[in-house]
Length: 65
Image (cartoon, rainbow, N blue to C red; front, side):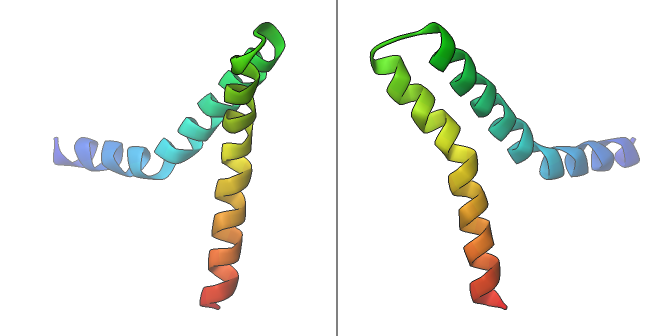
């Protein structure tokens, strides 16, 4: 049973952040289409999150090289 829990831990470690970013992106797209007012700011922040994360790790990699 330890093999199964180890496999699950690896899955969660690898895929937890991409799944979270995908959910944020989907939330941002739906809110931008369906809501108005303050929700547009929430959509903007949700859609900016994947871009910010990508830029963060892009610059982090260049600085450490």
